[in-house]
Image 1: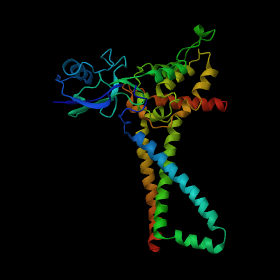
Image 2: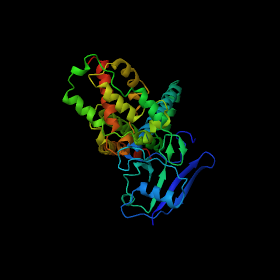
Image 3: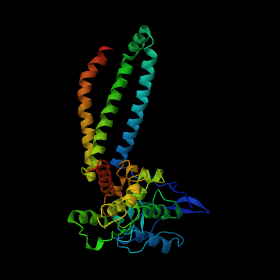
Image 4: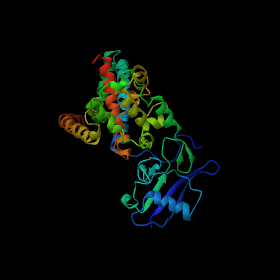
Length: 230
Length: 126
């Protein structure tokens, strides 16, 4: 029987690992395991989930040493008789596996993830090249796995982090956007694209294989080209 | 609330994280070496006999072996630096793991050539 080892936390009792042996069906996901623990062992276990189909990004947590989506991760696929579950790293823990996403949303808001339309935006043509760049980002489900696995985001709390930078780049290259100077200041600063020190943890972390570092590298190139009048 | 980064879950170990750490360790070691090197040379160059004395000490097998380690740090730091520059230039960021192994292979090849040249010199000083 698979042992679920969960890092529990509450402000009153502190942090402690607890072990559970939930009864699971063959194709069970880690989320099914958590549901079984809550139903049969401890109804106080706190965790987030919503869509159960790897689209909403709510159930991202630390599973066997790396961030994964609990709904997408089958217990059998872990090839271990022990499933170790902890809250996402790099974010404050509210209770058990529920983390405070505020630092991520704050960083996300800083990059202005909306289009500031040019007066003639409606008649402008977005080229295939630009739309290809923008399209890649749509796979991102904002689960925070990249943010939580990034050593830079964990240490430098002002660093915007992989996902916000990636979305910032999406707006930066959109020809319909009218806030380029503002974006350049935010994304081109030391807390922006230049804050990434290349640990590349975000590539492995992403459950949708988006690779934020690809966008950060492109953003840096754009910034350098513009600096030298390219 | 348990403050940010305090939870006992650790960062995932991957090739990228290892390369990130190794590059920084090599970089700090090289910076420390450079400072020590300049200070030592500055102190030794005050007079001829002092300089000769320091040089004689540095030609011991122990110090020559340390120079091999220094060479390894320089080659690795340079090779991994090229990998990072290429990724920054947009060359296949997704292939960073393969590029790391290329950097390690390049380091091993250059170091092997250097060892073939330097090890006989060290042995002569035994």
